[in-house]
Amino acid sequence: QVKLVESGGGLVQAGGSLRLSCAASGSIFSINVMGWYRQAPGKQRELVADITSGGITNSADSVKGRFTISRDNDKNTVYLQMNSLKPEDTAVYYCKLQNRRLAFSQIYWGQGTEVTVSS
Image 1 (tube, rainbow, N blue to C red):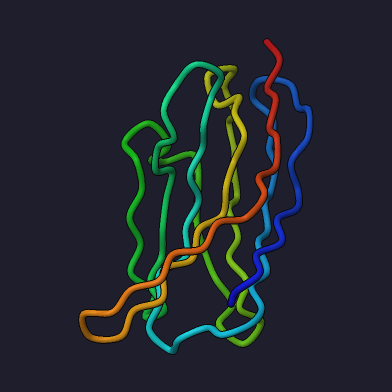
Image 2 (cartoon, one colour; image 1 turned 90 degrees about the vertical axis):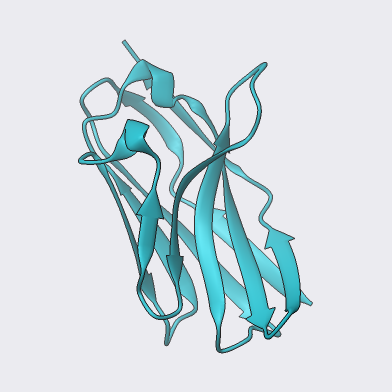
């Protein structure tokens, strides 16, 4: 089992910054992908950004140039630095970890942390 604990959400004015953290513990494979998804009210959960254990990143076009994902493999922690926040970034942000081993995959989700951007 894997436990994911998120922190760093809150209320911020448009143009401001927040940094989300997600610490993973438990049975974590050496090859994995950690990432952030978000879900706004009435909308589907969507990928914000993710990063492999090897450091390869992927992010949504809507956050490119504003959000940066990084990770500390020694701490099993992934970070999301969010700059130039917009009201449309308001959502619950969820951390996800995907363990990978050959064809085997396990997915775990955090409980979510709320981000509210006021205009």
